[in-house]
Image 1 (cartoon, rainbow, N blue to C red):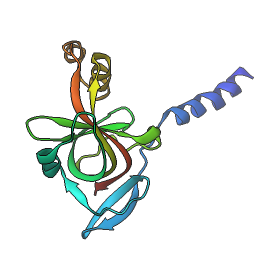
Image 2: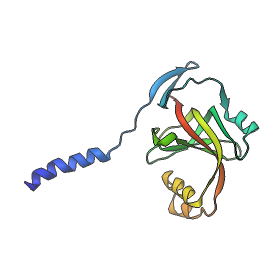
Image 3: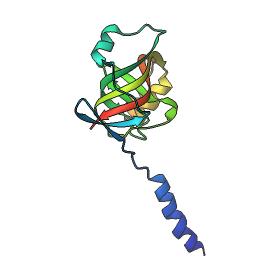
Image 4: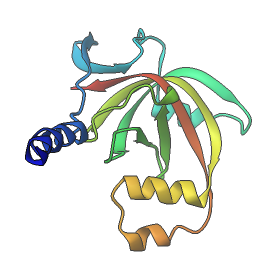
Length: 162
């Protein structure tokens, strides 16, 4: 009897724990194939990362916009956040509204994101958590000892170039 239970329970647990990365919905834009994650949006009035950096935003401002950039890193555990490259080794933290969608953890390259951008302060604890998610060593995580002001982006939808 116990043997039969284990025959059923063990494979069931293995299937539940194995997460497959979801493939986005294919969308053509500018003769390129992108994959959509999150809510659908029309990619018009796109602002490039370099144009955004030239203009920036005030500390207390929040802007709704569509931004084109390049993925620098993605959460290796679930794909629940990504960082976009900015100049001077800066990065913009992108999270997905209400954790309603994730992206593949191996995503890279060009991306178009729609949502809101704002300034935020990441605590030491948050920075250490994101470092752990990105696969940093314990030594690298322990070196993080001060908070950091960054641009944050809360995305409703994401288009990732194939």
